[in-house]
Length: 279
Image (cartoon, rainbow, N blue to C red; front, top):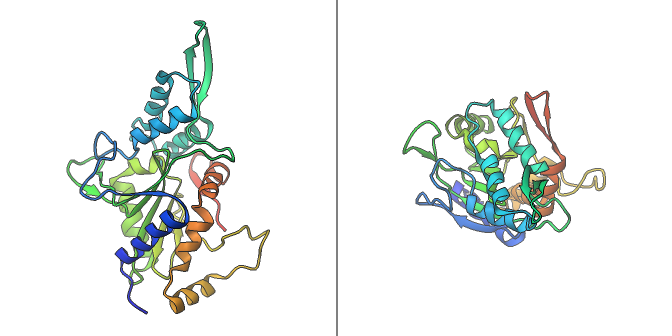
């Protein structure tokens, strides 16, 4: 079997998301802004505004602009889990606004941020190698391997490593460093995925730093005849295909599944710990 480095894994992952899952892909090398005002920002405001106008045609533009400002305002002084919870609830419930209607009467409403209906009228984008400037330092950046955006909001971060690194080392050196240097990314991120070639682990964004594998394409309660982790790894080694990556993509990141997961399988325990579901 040929040796797989990080670039091979990234290329395979990009192909999966574009060809099989229908994401649009942008390679953001060379410090592209992609609609951001600066490299410190993580939300693609142009795409967010387009999506919000599409989802809220009955609301005036002032309400859309207010919702964007509420989603993207700095939360640097907040505890990370509280900042993430605050943004999560704004995305899930919508941003409360008030405005005057055509008759001059005050109305209250919510700006919908993501379409959770079966129609799923959302914008799905895969961005590779996005440069994000340190929150507290100028001219120094980090580049997550892959970010999954929904309506201009980064909801999933994927870091890809070759099999020579240990999972614990990858977690310590990548996730913890990112949380320290670019905490603004984790205000919106739902989960962090860490792939180790043929031995992937998927890392939950909890204060405890829980590590677990995503192993199922379907709900085990509906179909319990699915391969185990060892069987997946052996088949990957035999065929040279990164099957765990495929299972993670198709099992969690398919458009309808990702939206369902975000809406229904995230909770915050006593404002101290973020808990997400596993298979």
